[in-house]
Length: 230
Image (cartoon, rainbow, N blue to C red):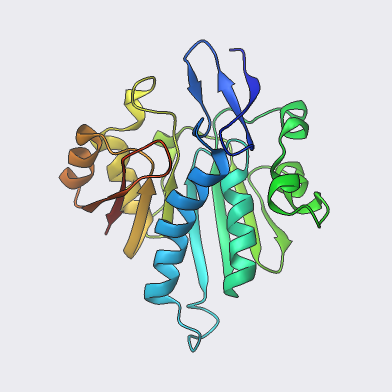
């Protein structure tokens, strides 16, 4: 399936699938969306609740599962945020169809987010081998797994899930009770799942498997998003 690089509303790049009229990130702003949905309402929210400055090192380590590793943007902004917060992230990214080296080279996230730094950390996110844990730097350890979301069998392993699958319009099978049951099982108690979607059917599927679901203000171009707690 053909994929192409496009510029979004905040100047950052994303990948588009013309056949589906679907993008890996919001056309209104890839970085804006990622920061709003996953950092503000996911990582920062969880850190504020459960990772105080006085906490021991174990409680200042957060496990994150990303559903749809894709361009690596969410992992990259998480690495940057972890540096600011003084926490360590054990990050697992699941992706069935990894992006190509050529596509990675065409993305402008380092230039946009860290223009004063080299692109080594971002490139390292993609160059590390799959199915193994790799220390990207002192703030983030990354494991990439090439598998379908339905194949995930983790049990109470993560504090946060970034649910960033393609939309229900094009892949409704990724937004079902069966998938959210897998997500619920993968989260530790008090864990949270955040997603850009606010569809009623998605919220009801989450609630059906035991999540407590909040509607929150969405990123630019989107009225609402969802955060689900275990």
